[in-house]
Each structure stands twice: as structure tokens, then as C-alpha cells.
Length: 87
Ligand SMILES: [Zn+2]
Image (cartoon, rainbow, N blue to C red):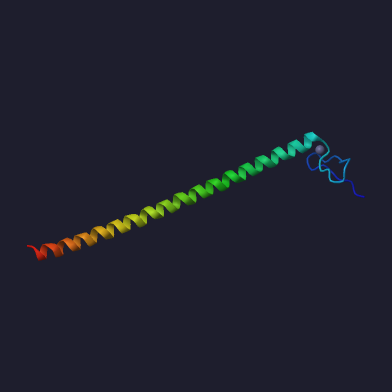
């Protein structure tokens, strides 16, 4: 049987076969570090999602401006027709 070592301090882990850490201190330290890593990753993902949403909104705004400009051109053309009919 190989001796299992604590992933935090490297000491030999004694006790149940599924025990991972040598002490509560090491287990808590490990889980806190894991939590920090996960929170940091979640923050990065949130930031990326936010920037994607902002980019999509910018694209939407550009498309909307193009549509409005197109509509105003159509109205200008229509108004010239109206002037021709009723001078
Ligand atoms: Zn340990």
C-alpha cells in the first residue's frame, strides 16, 4: 500500500481510505483556495459575458442607425414624389 500525502503540506495522511488531507486546517485551507480560484474564474467569465453583451448592443445600435438612415432616405425620395404630384 502506498502512503497518501496531503496535497497542501505533503505530510502522510492517516485514517480512512478516502481521507484526502492530514488535518482540518489543511482541508479548510485547500477548500478556501479552491473557492478563491473558482470565484476568480467566475468573475473572469462574467466580465467576458458582459463585454460580449456590450459588443452586441453596439452592433444593434449600428444596425438601428443604418435602418433609421435608410428610412429617412426613403421618406426623402417619397417627399420628392409628393412634390411632383402637387407642385
Ligand atoms: Zn496537510
